[in-house]
Length: 121
Length: 106
Image (cartoon, rainbow over all chains, first blue to last red):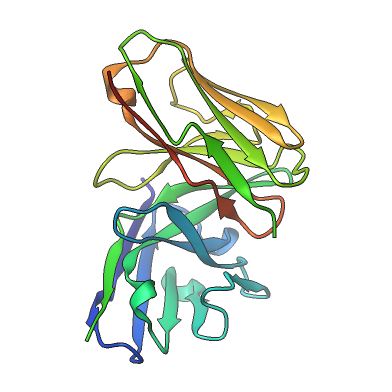
Protein backbone atom coordinates (compact mmCIF):
# COMPACT_ATOMS: atom_id res chain seq x y z
CA UNK A 1 0.00 0.00 0.00
CA UNK A 2 1.36 3.38 -1.02
CA UNK A 3 1.78 5.75 1.90
CA UNK A 4 2.98 9.34 1.93
CA UNK A 5 3.37 10.91 5.36
CA UNK A 6 4.23 14.58 5.63
CA UNK A 7 5.81 16.25 8.64
CA UNK A 8 7.52 19.46 9.63
CA UNK A 9 4.67 21.92 9.46
CA UNK A 10 3.87 24.41 12.18
CA UNK A 11 3.53 28.05 13.15
CA UNK A 12 6.39 30.26 11.99
CA UNK A 13 6.99 34.00 11.88
CA UNK A 14 7.24 35.85 8.58
CA UNK A 15 10.75 35.79 7.18
CA UNK A 16 11.70 32.59 8.98
CA UNK A 17 12.33 29.13 7.54
CA UNK A 18 10.73 25.71 7.76
CA UNK A 19 11.64 22.33 6.31
CA UNK A 20 8.92 19.90 5.30
CA UNK A 21 9.50 16.19 4.87
CA UNK A 22 7.56 13.37 3.29
CA UNK A 23 8.21 9.72 4.12
CA UNK A 24 7.20 7.41 1.29
CA UNK A 25 6.54 3.70 1.39
CA UNK A 26 4.76 1.00 -0.58
CA UNK A 27 6.39 1.73 -3.94
CA UNK A 28 9.85 2.00 -5.49
CA UNK A 29 10.49 5.61 -4.55
CA UNK A 30 13.41 6.21 -6.86
CA UNK A 31 11.35 5.28 -9.92
CA UNK A 32 9.01 8.26 -9.63
CA UNK A 33 9.01 12.02 -9.76
CA UNK A 34 7.47 13.69 -6.72
CA UNK A 35 5.72 16.98 -6.10
CA UNK A 36 4.48 19.35 -3.43
CA UNK A 37 0.99 20.85 -3.78
CA UNK A 38 -0.50 23.32 -1.32
CA UNK A 39 -3.96 24.51 -0.43
CA UNK A 40 -4.55 27.75 1.43
CA UNK A 41 -7.49 27.76 3.85
CA UNK A 42 -10.73 27.67 1.91
CA UNK A 43 -8.93 27.93 -1.42
CA UNK A 44 -8.02 25.69 -4.34
CA UNK A 45 -5.00 23.58 -5.14
CA UNK A 46 -1.68 25.14 -6.10
CA UNK A 47 1.27 23.18 -7.45
CA UNK A 48 4.39 24.30 -5.58
CA UNK A 49 7.33 22.26 -6.77
CA UNK A 50 8.39 19.01 -8.40
CA UNK A 51 11.52 16.90 -8.72
CA UNK A 52 12.45 14.11 -11.10
CA UNK A 53 13.24 10.60 -9.88
CA UNK A 54 16.99 11.10 -9.90
CA UNK A 55 16.90 14.78 -8.89
CA UNK A 56 18.30 15.94 -12.22
CA UNK A 57 15.51 18.43 -12.72
CA UNK A 58 13.38 20.53 -10.41
CA UNK A 59 10.59 23.02 -10.99
CA UNK A 60 8.92 25.70 -8.94
CA UNK A 61 5.84 27.86 -9.05
CA UNK A 62 6.64 31.52 -9.64
CA UNK A 63 5.18 32.30 -6.22
CA UNK A 64 7.95 30.34 -4.44
CA UNK A 65 10.84 30.48 -6.87
CA UNK A 66 14.05 31.61 -5.17
CA UNK A 67 12.63 30.96 -1.70
CA UNK A 68 11.78 27.22 -1.69
CA UNK A 69 14.05 24.30 -2.53
CA UNK A 70 12.85 20.78 -3.21
CA UNK A 71 15.11 17.78 -2.65
CA UNK A 72 14.88 14.04 -2.17
CA UNK A 73 16.85 11.24 -0.56
CA UNK A 74 16.21 8.08 -2.53
CA UNK A 75 18.15 5.96 -0.04
CA UNK A 76 15.67 7.01 2.64
CA UNK A 77 12.58 7.26 0.41
CA UNK A 78 12.04 10.81 1.54
CA UNK A 79 11.08 14.09 -0.08
CA UNK A 80 11.80 17.51 1.37
CA UNK A 81 10.83 21.12 0.89
CA UNK A 82 13.07 23.79 2.37
CA UNK A 83 11.02 26.95 2.73
CA UNK A 84 12.87 30.21 3.38
CA UNK A 85 11.72 33.80 3.69
CA UNK A 86 8.21 32.66 4.50
CA UNK A 87 5.30 35.01 3.91
CA UNK A 88 1.75 35.11 5.21
CA UNK A 89 0.56 33.97 1.79
CA UNK A 90 2.50 30.72 2.19
CA UNK A 91 0.03 29.68 4.89
CA UNK A 92 -1.52 26.46 3.63
CA UNK A 93 -1.83 22.72 3.93
CA UNK A 94 1.11 21.20 2.06
CA UNK A 95 0.61 17.88 0.32
CA UNK A 96 3.28 15.47 -0.87
CA UNK A 97 2.23 13.75 -4.09
CA UNK A 98 3.55 10.96 -6.26
CA UNK A 99 3.65 11.36 -10.02
CA UNK A 100 2.06 8.76 -12.27
CA UNK A 101 3.21 8.45 -15.85
CA UNK A 102 1.08 7.09 -18.68
CA UNK A 103 3.30 7.50 -21.68
CA UNK A 104 3.95 11.25 -21.85
CA UNK A 105 1.00 12.02 -19.62
CA UNK A 106 1.62 12.97 -15.99
CA UNK A 107 -0.79 13.01 -13.10
CA UNK A 108 -0.61 12.77 -9.33
CA UNK A 109 -1.96 9.40 -8.25
CA UNK A 110 -1.19 9.33 -4.53
CA UNK A 111 -1.36 12.10 -1.97
CA UNK A 112 -0.43 12.37 1.68
CA UNK A 113 -2.77 13.85 4.25
CA UNK A 114 -0.83 17.09 4.35
CA UNK A 115 1.12 19.12 6.89
CA UNK A 116 -0.14 22.54 7.89
CA UNK A 117 2.07 25.62 7.68
CA UNK A 118 0.94 28.84 9.29
CA UNK A 119 2.99 31.99 8.78
CA UNK A 120 2.04 34.64 11.28
CA UNK A 121 3.65 37.05 13.69
CA UNK B 1 1.62 30.57 -18.49
CA UNK B 2 -1.39 28.49 -19.43
CA UNK B 3 -4.51 29.60 -17.61
CA UNK B 4 -7.22 27.17 -16.58
CA UNK B 5 -10.86 27.98 -15.96
CA UNK B 6 -13.72 25.81 -14.76
CA UNK B 7 -17.44 26.26 -15.02
CA UNK B 8 -19.60 26.40 -13.14
CA UNK B 9 -17.77 27.34 -9.95
CA UNK B 10 -20.49 25.55 -8.03
CA UNK B 11 -23.65 23.62 -8.73
CA UNK B 12 -26.47 22.05 -6.80
CA UNK B 13 -27.75 18.68 -7.94
CA UNK B 14 -29.82 15.76 -6.75
CA UNK B 15 -28.92 12.11 -6.42
CA UNK B 16 -29.38 10.49 -9.81
CA UNK B 17 -28.76 13.67 -11.79
CA UNK B 18 -26.36 13.81 -14.72
CA UNK B 19 -23.68 16.38 -13.94
CA UNK B 20 -21.25 18.00 -16.37
CA UNK B 21 -18.30 20.17 -15.39
CA UNK B 22 -16.30 22.09 -17.97
CA UNK B 23 -12.61 22.95 -17.91
CA UNK B 24 -11.01 25.29 -20.44
CA UNK B 25 -7.32 25.90 -21.08
CA UNK B 26 -5.97 29.22 -22.32
CA UNK B 27 -4.14 27.44 -25.12
CA UNK B 28 -4.10 23.95 -26.57
CA UNK B 29 -2.90 21.33 -24.10
CA UNK B 30 -3.66 18.31 -26.28
CA UNK B 31 -4.96 15.68 -23.82
CA UNK B 32 -2.70 16.63 -20.91
CA UNK B 33 -5.63 17.08 -18.58
CA UNK B 34 -6.48 15.33 -15.32
CA UNK B 35 -9.48 15.43 -13.01
CA UNK B 36 -9.41 15.16 -9.22
CA UNK B 37 -12.09 14.88 -6.56
CA UNK B 38 -11.64 16.40 -3.12
CA UNK B 39 -13.96 15.94 -0.16
CA UNK B 40 -13.85 18.29 2.84
CA UNK B 41 -10.89 17.62 5.09
CA UNK B 42 -9.44 15.02 2.74
CA UNK B 43 -6.65 14.90 0.21
CA UNK B 44 -7.58 15.05 -3.48
CA UNK B 45 -8.06 11.82 -5.39
CA UNK B 46 -7.18 11.25 -9.03
CA UNK B 47 -10.23 10.27 -11.07
CA UNK B 48 -9.26 10.64 -14.73
CA UNK B 49 -5.96 11.17 -16.50
CA UNK B 50 -5.01 11.95 -20.07
CA UNK B 51 -8.41 13.62 -20.46
CA UNK B 52 -10.46 10.45 -20.74
CA UNK B 53 -8.75 7.50 -19.06
CA UNK B 54 -10.51 6.35 -15.93
CA UNK B 55 -8.19 5.47 -13.09
CA UNK B 56 -8.54 1.92 -11.85
CA UNK B 57 -11.11 1.61 -9.06
CA UNK B 58 -12.99 4.77 -10.03
CA UNK B 59 -16.68 4.10 -10.71
CA UNK B 60 -17.68 4.00 -14.37
CA UNK B 61 -20.29 6.73 -13.83
CA UNK B 62 -17.35 9.15 -14.10
CA UNK B 63 -16.12 9.98 -17.58
CA UNK B 64 -13.93 12.58 -19.19
CA UNK B 65 -13.72 13.94 -22.69
CA UNK B 66 -12.13 16.66 -24.73
CA UNK B 67 -8.82 17.69 -26.20
CA UNK B 68 -7.11 20.90 -27.16
CA UNK B 69 -8.67 23.61 -25.00
CA UNK B 70 -12.08 22.29 -23.94
CA UNK B 71 -12.69 19.39 -21.57
CA UNK B 72 -15.59 17.93 -19.63
CA UNK B 73 -16.04 15.73 -16.61
CA UNK B 74 -19.39 13.95 -16.56
CA UNK B 75 -21.01 12.07 -13.71
CA UNK B 76 -23.76 10.04 -15.33
CA UNK B 77 -25.85 9.46 -12.21
CA UNK B 78 -24.80 11.42 -9.14
CA UNK B 79 -24.40 9.38 -5.98
CA UNK B 80 -24.34 10.65 -2.38
CA UNK B 81 -20.58 10.05 -2.15
CA UNK B 82 -19.96 12.26 -5.19
CA UNK B 83 -20.72 15.51 -3.43
CA UNK B 84 -17.30 17.11 -3.43
CA UNK B 85 -15.13 19.68 -5.19
CA UNK B 86 -13.67 18.73 -8.55
CA UNK B 87 -10.47 20.14 -9.99
CA UNK B 88 -8.99 19.88 -13.45
CA UNK B 89 -5.22 20.00 -13.88
CA UNK B 90 -3.08 20.53 -16.95
CA UNK B 91 0.32 18.88 -17.16
CA UNK B 92 1.17 20.04 -20.68
CA UNK B 93 3.56 22.50 -19.07
CA UNK B 94 4.21 23.44 -15.43
CA UNK B 95 1.35 21.71 -13.62
CA UNK B 96 -1.61 23.98 -12.97
CA UNK B 97 -4.96 23.30 -11.38
CA UNK B 98 -8.24 24.87 -12.30
CA UNK B 99 -10.10 26.84 -9.63
CA UNK B 100 -12.46 23.99 -8.79
CA UNK B 101 -16.17 23.20 -9.05
CA UNK B 102 -18.10 22.46 -5.88
CA UNK B 103 -20.95 19.99 -6.26
CA UNK B 104 -23.44 20.09 -3.42
CA UNK B 105 -26.85 18.72 -2.61
CA UNK B 106 -29.91 20.46 -4.01
